[in-house]
Amino acid sequence: MLVADEEQVRHARRVVRGLRRHYPIAECALDYDSSFQLLVAVILSAQCTDARVNLVTPALFRRYPTADKLARCRQATLERIIHSTGFFRNKAKNLIACAKKLVEKHGGEPPRTMEEMLELPGVARKTANVVLGTAY
Image (cartoon, rainbow, N blue to C red; front, side, top):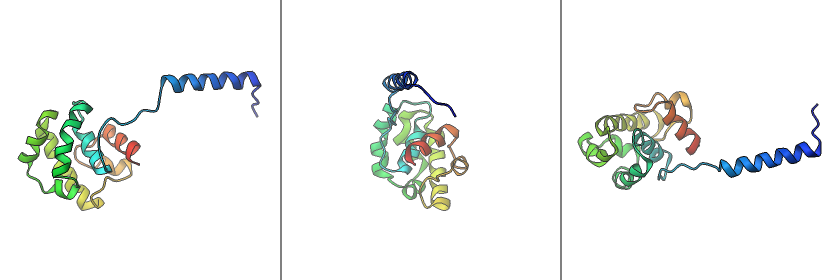
């Protein structure tokens, strides 16, 4: 069993304080009200800034607040809304397909496992990690 003396404990506490000061708790910069909206925002954030995504999502989420509503939208309509995020055709296609799969297989909500997240169109490991780590 390892026993630390008082000097080692003080040193460890100083190190931890310094780490906390230099590496504060990171928060997600995307604006969202549900795990579904977070997933949509993270998909949109690929090759785009969070600030730009936050300019687009209020109108998007007003019109399509749920997976069910997004699954039924026209791709051309979605493309117009998300155009400024770049790669809008691919993102629109993936978002609609993702929303359909969420409705069909997951009750309209993002799944809670990496394996199931990676089965969603437009979702790779980075997106899955952000959603799982932030929403759940």
